[in-house]
Image (cartoon, rainbow, N blue to C red; front, side, top):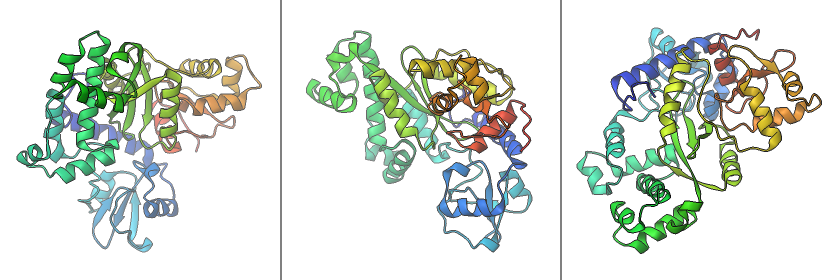
Length: 378
């Protein structure tokens, strides 16, 4: 994500991501949970604590992410740090298994050439032998795509090709040339694969909606972005526990299918998120597709009116929309917000000034508010 549309994995792209991570680590350093909470999260491999702390093991001399798959050490052999740089300064080296120096959610270096190739040659059909010819283990590639995208490498490529085909069909292009250019040897094979993935036939495409989804990196962890033809409809942290529910609700509200793919809105979104995390942007000017009830959209619009660097209580938000007795309903609507950061539900706090629920985790809520210059008493 960059103003210059930096290729993923480029040196400058990695430098930007690392600089973001250091900023967030600085924000978190004074707010790290106590050591017992950290140890319990380490034992349970709790992904909600990614970015909150790093665990260093004195017997091995390495430090890890909270979700590292290595065997868990004894409590007396572990100390915790708010940032990777602190762990390095204390003489620990990064774990080779969980790679804590790598930006959270970033693709490993061995996979970067393949991802760059996919961006430029989306329609090429790569088989396992093609991966081996590139020095890649097909099983290793498969595991990464399943862990990161919830599907195999070949399924990911197929879904992207079908997503691109859908866009062409929406523009009125003929089915036959699209099918053959997508790598299919017959119209029936294309139609069958298309319907299996989208739930409708190619001929119905003009009347259907597709939400293109794509992962984006941020210093607070990977985000899942979604866009229709008219705007951004999804921006959720990828480890949010309600993510699957939110995706199902989005499909229902928009009568749409979700497919991996690109969107012109993603370029602008990436640029504006970069500027926001670098402290160079206070407002977003992207078209949004909120897809909620009348009450929900009223609550979400009131969130967008909260100025950068300020907070509002749930009661104040209810007063703002003219329904002072609907405090709990407002809180539920905020929790159902599917477009994080752009619709800043993180700016709503308890009446007593305390941080309250946030789908992405309270540590992220605190980090976002402190990034915006909000002084928090706890």
